[in-house]
Amino acid sequence: VDAANFEQFLQERIKVNGKAGNLGGGVVTVRRSKSKITVTSKVPFSKRYLKYLTKKYLKKNNLLANSKESYKLRSFQINQDEEEEEGED
Image (cartoon, rainbow, N blue to C red; front, side, top):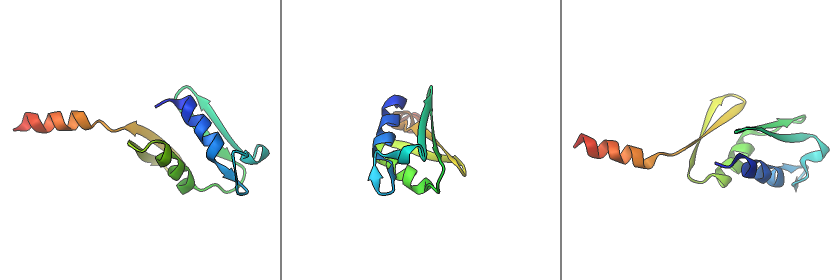
């Protein structure tokens, strides 16, 4: 997962007052520090909308809500699960 690319995606897609890419002149901010992206809003901001945008960007990754106000992104490890099943037979 490229954090810089995901940050750019959020900045372009988040709608404020019905306009994408506007971010309301500082009403909504998207910041990145290493692999952590923080979305801060001065107005009510839907966690569901952020989840929708994240799912749109990461179709094959898992989105976990680790608290009421944050998310944690983890990649699926399908190959590892298949190898464990084969080893049990």
